[in-house]
Image (cartoon, rainbow, N blue to C red):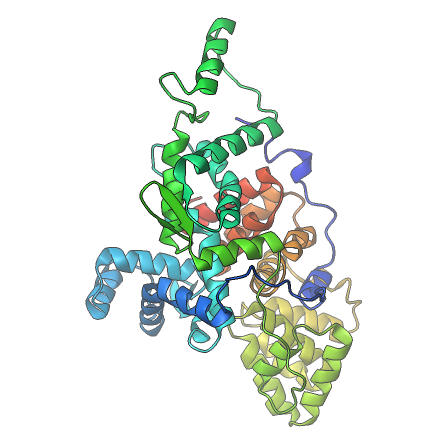
Length: 470
């Protein structure tokens, strides 16, 4: 039990900013030279090859599920096992990983390929981002033992980044006892930071002193690594290491653990708070709408609009609008937002097509905002045309774009744009809106947010959505 919970004022959202501002956050990214990875880090192509190996079964399952419009039922998994020559357990694990890595998405209960799956064979960046999404969700890939209290699990998940940092700094095998020592220290620090106050009947002072001495010296029935929930930290450390090994972040030897090249690179990325993103080409006039929008993603709004105008000038209006809306219907949320930015440059000639697009759930919030601005509304006030559900859907879609293409700090700041007044209300409405990227967004937000209590609540929400819980 902690002294802080989700009703704490520190977990309340600040006054919401207009959604139009949040929508532009992805294209208003800071530009800075990318730090160089540690010496010995394999090149991106080699890291991507290793990530493809880790997710090979997940990719096979995702492609089968997308081709057969699967819904993840037991019967379909049995059919997939027979078709792919995998066991039902491998199919279940592959399906789980495919969803967490953004390779497959459920739309109305039916599987559709995620944008990463479509780019899997040609885009190393998409592959690495898919693997990082899986890395962030390691505690969902390898669920904790059922008999361990959620509070104990949450403490360990919160402390694991320090364990990974030690592994990364050591640049080689680290004995498990050393990792356990660090885990004990970090869990103790977390409890001290939360100023935990025990509830319920308390032991007499003599018993408390004896218990404290037992923990300090490593004696007693529970040992030095007992958690508040009665589960030994050593067992939870084993669970965490096994979970990280299951996603390819580390390897386990006889009493030691070692980061893989992928794991070492991922920890470095997290420590540097950078993202792996494709560089923008110099010109876009001859490119497809998708490639043009990707190239404009790193431009500020002014230069991006100039690129849109040049690209539009080389095409008929009808063909350009059709191509932009086709990209908007795709799986990449960043491109969806940028496609409507380009359609703003088209203006009146795109009105009929945008009105028609408003009938499609995935495009409706963007189309309504476009129409409001076209009809003269102030861009900062257009969010008022959206229902609460549409605004929440757009918030998740924008968060997906930031998680895929932006820095962690942007994802944290994106919380400010939610229409809900508190984090609990936001999480409740996110779960209800049914966006196909909900789990990935929540996992990424939990991994990025510096507030331990908020991160724990977001992780719990991700787990509930992933498992179909309330």
